[in-house]
Every structure is written in structure tokens, then in C-alpha cells.
Image (tube, rainbow, N blue to C red):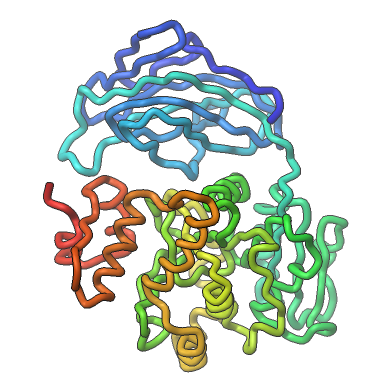
Length: 439
């Protein structure tokens, strides 16, 4: 960290109707001034263009709270971290890259509770400390992707969103007659199908052979825009699992013996997720891991166009958990308009998923027992369970279902994170009611 700047109580200003108090000189109390509003506190801070910052707070309260960031004109900038847990005194942080030199606004807002019909006027939180720190631009991370000529229109936007977050980018060009001029720069290494063959999506793993074990290896897609805090937040997720897992945004949970590739629960990369959730498969357009944790060879991908499934199978055999990370909705978004989203691997798989079904069978069984087996290895190695209470309860409930509902049933705690998770997974109402404890 560099240039840590404390944000003192006197710097904060009310946002909407709040009641401010100071129990101690360094502690600022914030109470909702009226029901149904989203009040909070904001403070101006000075930043330098292109610098990455971490805004860290320590607080306790009785209501959901979200981070706030706005430019000098108070136009809000969307953030990845939406909610801070209630009733726990702990440090929470969000990161951002400054788009301009000058003043921006950071803050904390009280959110309306999803479990209540209306916001309560007694909602409050106490801000015990707050700071803003710049972080080194070097992340120790690299990104890697594969592309094809039809994605030449979306590729520049994808690169622009990730280049300043990593030290290097590897790009495999499938069926390009020549290397585009905008890729001829020192921070980009290009490989071509003329040398390796048309590897399709497998090409995003070519760069893995070039990096040491401690490198954080991000596989990305050529049609996604990544937020400015993508690498920072994904790295934080890796750290929560002691860098012994692969983490991602788009996730899939398969049953023990799936009938087809689409027999699954999906957590789409645009969806919110309230807690880190272990899954069976990750979309390799939104995945990161320590290179030494999982290093598949190109030869491990027996067919190309199914990188997600082969990566999942290889991770399962290696005992490496796959984790879909907690995030807000629309944290990532498409670089292509809906009308431009043609000739995708997803569309191809929808029309014929027989090859995927064979690979599923090859690496089976799947399901919660296999998920738990890999998570348990992290627990043993790190000496702690890396899952939240809600994620742990969902995994245990899945195990109970796989045992044909025999043995002691595991209830899922009725918390906002659990309710949000059930909605994200689109669980049927009857299953939601069965899973939640009634106490």
C-alpha cells in the first residue's frame, strides 16, 4: 500500500435525511432519518488519474449498507461490492481506478432490507474507521484470451477494459490472415493458428506455458467488458481460498449424473451473487487461478470448443475447487449488441450438445459430493472452512438431497444472503421453503 489517507469524521457529509452522532471522537454514528429512503454519508477525496485506490472501512450496524462512489459532479459510478454484512464489526473494502485527477466522492448508503416490507427509521451503522489507499499498478497478473476475425469489432473494447489491470496479455488468433496493428505492442504476446492450429477457445490457455507458478492467470473472452476493479476483486476472492481454488463469475452446478450439458443450475455472469459459491464448472471467459494451482496442457483438451467443461474436469481430478464469486449484478457486461451475438459457442452447443455430454460422462460423477470433496482439501490445507455460513448450508443441503433425503436434514439460515442466493439459482418456491429454517 502507498499513501494511506485517513478519512476523519469531520470530513463526512450527510446524504439524504440522516441523524449523525459521535459516540467517540473517532466513531461516527449514522441513523436513517425517515423510512423508505437510502440515506448515508459521503466524503470528498483527491485522486490521481489512472491510479488504483482501495476504500476501506470498519463498521458495525443493524441494516444493509452499500458502498458509494461518484465523480466530481456527483454522478454515481457503479461498484462491484453492493452490500456490507449487518451486525458484524469488520473491515470491508472496495477498489476503483480514478478516471480523472481531482476530486471524487466516496461514501456509505443505508439500503432497504429485502426481508422487510419497508425500511425502518431506526436503521443505523457506526463508522469506526475509514481510509483511502493507493495500490501499486503492478498486479502480478496476466490475462489470456483466444479470438477470431468475426470478433475484431469487440476485441479493442475488451482489451481496453483489462490492459491497465494486468502486467501482460496473451492473445491467440484463430484464422487471422495477419496480426491487427492495435495488437502490436510490448505488453501483448500474440500466437497464431498458423503455428498451433485453430484451437478455438482452448487457445486462451496457450499463454499458461509462459508464466511461473506464482502468476495469477486470468482467462477472458473477446466479447466481455471487464470492470476497472475486476483483477483486484478476483484476486481478493482467490485469497479467501488461500489461492488453492480457481475462481470465476459465470458458474454451473451439475447433478451427480447429468442427463445432458443443460441439466444444471447456472449462475450467469451478469447475475448478482450474495456469497462465494462452489460450483461444478466455471465459464473460462471469467476465470482466474494461480498458475501453479492448475496448469492444464493444450493436449489435455481433447476437443476444442469445450474449454469450460475440460477445465472443470481437470480441476475436479486435481482436487481444485471452482468458485463463483460474490458480486453485484451486471458487474460484467457484453461488448457486443444482441444483434451482433452470432456464431457463439453457446449457440453451437444449444444446437448440438452431444460432444459435451460425452465429456460430462468422461469426467463424472459430478454433483455436491464432488464439490464438497474439493472444498474439503482447501479446508484441510488452510485450517478453516472457506465457505460462508450460507454457502456451507447450501452445499450441505445439496448433499442431503443427493443422499435421497436420508439422515439429518440441514436447514439453510434465513438471512438476506441466503434468500438472494436462492433467487439467483432460481430455485423453485417449494424448495426454498423446504430449505429455510423456520426458527
